[in-house]
Amino acid sequence: MFNFRFIKKLRDEFYRTVVFRRYQIGHGFHMGLRVRIWAKNTVIIGENFYIGRDSFIESDAIIGNNVMFGNRVALVGRYDHNFQQVGVPVRLASQIRDKDYDWLGLNTVTVIEDDVWVGYGSIIMSGVRIQRGSIIAAGSVVTKDVEPYSIYAGVPAKKIKDRFATKEDLENHIKLCGPASEITSNTPL
Image (cartoon, rainbow, N blue to C red; front, top):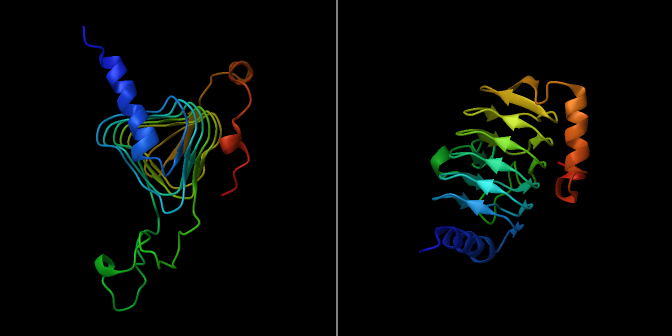
């Protein structure tokens, strides 16, 4: 009998080590179909990252361990085109992909800490920090930092509740999951 699980793992490893070799991606990486990853400078992804089909990372990003993106999630830049270039239509303006681009957004990094779930169709703008243990509801647009162990929803995303019902549940979860990874715990924006 044909082993499809082996083929999926082989495909994921090929993308992790060959196609996306420019970036630092940890073990346990799994991606759906039609995923694109591009950054001007860096993408660092921790262990056990899942990115659903038709999702995009198109900005500098640091993503922690045990993070899950649903399908059609996008990390996008706020300033990918210099829309203030006088006398130049936006379509023809300089863009962040250009080698000589010298406008806003050059050193903007999106940080997604450990144990985060980003729901279907969500958009995360560059430069935000989604703190450990948070959930972003499907279809949300994240424009500002997200508190730890919180659930955010909407356009723009706002906190709707805490992830855990009680403080004791939160403390037990943190104790059982251990400390935050070095990938995101001390990363400045």
